[in-house]
Length: 609
Image (cartoon, rainbow, N blue to C red):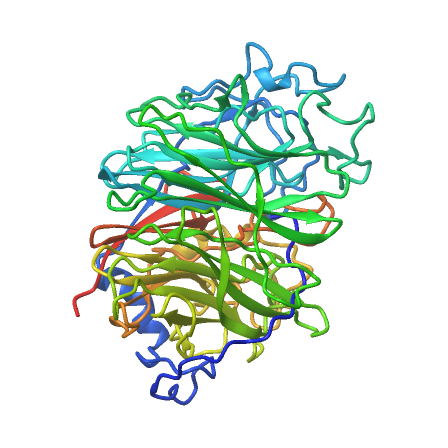
């Protein structure tokens, strides 16, 4: 995500008030937390108590590709950085581009593409999907970095055929190597078991100071024969078993949904949903959504096509501008479509008000009941939300403000809608949750999701709904202190490498490395609810190990910039009663001696009532 926020002011709709117990004394949030708080020791032990499993899905594979634009600046060895490296020999079976440039790189300007393939070191930002035709078939996707310092990456994938125990197939997603970056990993399965990845390829080159230049029509432009920026699709057909088996061509050219020349345009924040409900009148309709930051103001769009069994699809519909709530001169962003079992498709749309110092957010919901032909604004889950201006102690930026899903079982005759969002009103970030049981017209009073006692940051929530109506909220969690010096956990976390951090005062540990630092290192958590938001137990720790987000963290601005990145969201999905998540960690689970960002996949069963 290259743009963090746009501004928005929307009048709120009256919410339905639900009586809830007040938050216990000492809670980090002012919102009621129905399950009450739990101690840090109880939270730390919840991983084992709930039989959570973790697998490093990406750390063991050697993946390489030939980047369109090489960038060799290294910030290392500080904080684990090591720059761009030549490929030592890929083990993934993917086309590394060693023999010749990729098809979309033919016609590049002199100096492009790189002379040969480069090693993928870090995998940042996360998405995971379960095949509706086979619950043991999972595909995850993430950014596939060859240069963390240069923010130089394509999208990659990792695939399991045994319910997440092993991940034997992985590699970069082919077809769009002719752009500098492919960004924002997100995918969805159709009802045939084909997997659709919605891709955002874009061009830039590097200025002398390492910052990104998006100018086109110059000899420094990397690739003048392809559009500067596109919304596009790559499909992994059902039954594919090799890294290169993808369909990225439609009607004789790359599978473009929309193309842009970058002059006054910046497509971003794309998302995808497929109607995989056999009883729906729009079964196998694929919905692609994105915003175009047109002269900075984001404008939301949708396009759709119908999937075919062989992994192809009909032509994409002409991009249609979506309606926005009234009084949104600054526009809105964060489209997150989901489809109900009856075929109704809904999405959130979020805007920000720059008149408030911390960018107050308003979240609205749009809905279509005719397969995406017409849309209407149906309600406002939250308005005037205080969003985080950044986080204490560390340099990684915040991600998407909110998350959305649709329930799989009816409540009062309707499929519930759920929205979780970040709330920074107490000076630290917390996760709030609300629901609608009347198709978005009214919303329950928000409840607090995270149940930590200490006031620390909990951020980037992600919602999913199970077939039995259970709802899960996953989020990143900073309640546990970084491991202590001299411990095996500190060594596994690579804390000794963390020696330069412009945002850390040393207040808690006295100096770097951040041994014992609080509100610094990161875990991942989940909270389960029934369909009416009654909690099922407490927060569960779904990361086996605490990790340091400063290590080898990509620089989205320039190699010398202070802002870094762990992702704007992470993955969450259900296979029956098993909840899967995929998230970033720099901990060495056994195949990550360099402490690069890798993708960890967790699995946990829904707790008993």
